[in-house]
Every structure is written in C-alpha cells, then in structure tokens.
Image (cartoon, rainbow, N blue to C red; front, side, top):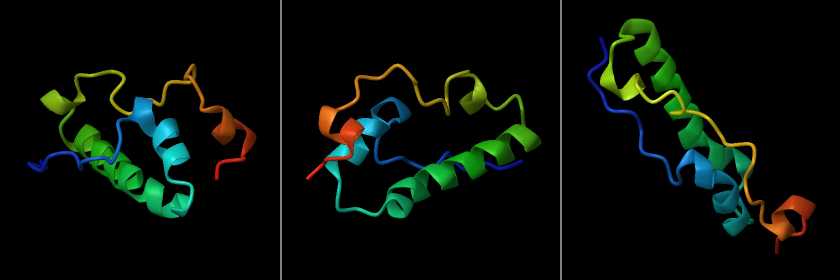
Length: 79
C-alpha cells in the first residue's frame, strides 16, 4: 500500500483551463506534468487500496466540461 499523499497540483482540475490561459508562455508539457504524476499516483492508489479515503471523491480527477472558458484561450489568441 502506498502511504504517500497525492501530489499537489498548481491548480484544481476545475481551474485548469484558466490556469493554462494565465500561463501562455509555459509549455503545455510542463503545465501537464504535475497532472500526469497525480494521475499515476491516483491509479496506483486505486489498484492497491480502493478503500483509501483519498479516493472517496468520485470527481477527484475529473475536468469539468462545462467551464467558463476564457475567450482568448478558447480562440487560441492568448498573449
């Protein structure tokens, strides 16, 4: 069993789109790296300890699809 905590994210999943829009000069691979680590740790916890209290939130790793998208980001015109 993994006793580690889930990695900290630079922004909650529900705030990810706005976080990306506010950091246009940061490469997407760099922005997404903490989320990939989070996903890997989450999968490990799920595989090894499904009763882990960190897994109780059914929306733990869900990016809401009905977000208020920043207009410049949506158009790819972020400056």
